[in-house]
Length: 488
Image 1 (tube, helix red, strand yellow):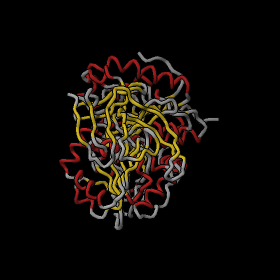
Image 2 (cartoon, helix red, strand yellow):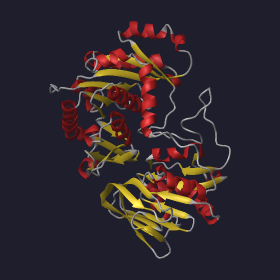
Image 3 (cartoon, helix red, strand yellow):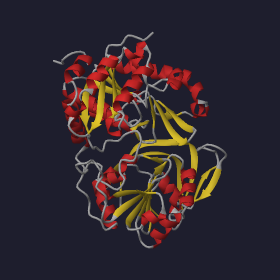
Image 4 (cartoon, one colour):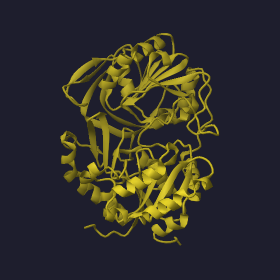
C-alpha cells in the first residue's frame, strides 16, 4: 500500500521510447514553476549514457538535471535514483543515488528489482513530502506486459504516487491513435483509472483535420485528448538519440526536414556507445555524425566524443576504418579533439586489466596521436570542474565522469594536469561541456577555419519558450487541477 504523501504527482508516460516525454516533463516543470508551485522532477530509472554531475559530485541523467533547472531547483539524485549506463547490448552499469554500484551491476536484471524498488520508493516520497508537485517521467512504454512484474519506472511508480497520468504519443511517426488505444488496452483496470488524458505530440499542420479521431478515441476509452502539441524543435538534453545529423537542431524547413550542411563541417564519430551528446549542441549546423572514413571528406575538424565502452568503441573505430581516416586527417593538419573516452582512444594505449568495462581485462593500442597512456580504475571520477586554459586564457567550466587515469609521456604538452593535453593539432580533455564555454568554442572553430554559428539562446530562455508552447496547447485548466488547484 502506498505511503500517504503531501505533494501532488503528475506523470508523463509514452506509447514508445522517444515520444518526447523528457521535454514535456521539463515544460510542465517550468510552466508549473511559473505558476508559483514548488515543483520537482522525478524519473525512477533512466537508461542513458547522457549523464551529468551534481554540485556534490553525484551522477544523474542529464534530462533530469535539465528538468530540475526547469523547475528552478538544484539537481538532486533523488530525482533520478537509478541510472543505467549501457556498456554493451546485454550489460549496463548501475548507478544508484549518484554512485556506481558494482554489486548491483553484476546482478541479473530481475534480481535487481528487490534491491532497487525500496530506494525508488524512498526517493519518490521524500520529494512528494518536500514539494507541492512532482512531475514524473516514465520510460519506454507502460504497455510492455512482459516487463510488468519487474516494473519500477512506469505504472508501479504511478500507483505508488497516486499520480495523474498523461499518455503521450509521437503523432509524427504515424499510427498515433492505434498506439494510444493499444496502450490503453494493455493496462489493467487500476492502471487505466490513473489515465487523465492523451497527448498528441509533435504534430505538424492543422489540428482541426484530426477530427473526428480524438472524439472517437475518447468514446473507446473514456479518456480525453487533452493536448495537441506542435512540432517543437529544441536542443534540450534527452535520454538518448542523436540531436544533430548535419543540421541545426533548432532550425528546419516548413516541411520539418533538416537543413543540410553545405560548407565545411565538424565531423563527430558516431561511436556505438557514445555518451553526453548534448555537449555538442553549440556546434549547431556545423556538426555531422560520421561512421565511415569517406564521410570525413571535407571535414574541417574531427571530434572523438565520450564513450561508455572505450575499448569496444576503439575496436569499432578500427573496424569501420575511421581510425585510419582520423590518423590521416591529423597528419594533414586537421584539428582533432578527443573528449573523455575519445581522449583515451587518441592515446598510445588503454588498459582495462581489472575488467571495469566487463569481461576479461585487456589492453588495446590507441591511435597514438597523443602520447598518453590510460589505465581503467574501479573508482569513478565524478565532479564539476573549473580550470584555466593556458591556450585560450579562458576559465572553462564543465564536469568529469570517467574511470580512466591518464599519464602523459614526453611528446605531449600537458596544458592542465589530468585534464587537458595537446600534441600539435591534436587535443584531448576529460572535461565534458568544453564546447559549451563560448571562449573555447570560438577558439576551436578558429582552428578549424570556421565561423561560429549563431549562439543558442540561454538554456533558461529555451525552457521558457518550450514551456510556453506546451502550456498553450494543453488543457491548462486540467493541469492546474491535477496540481491541486490554482496557486495563490
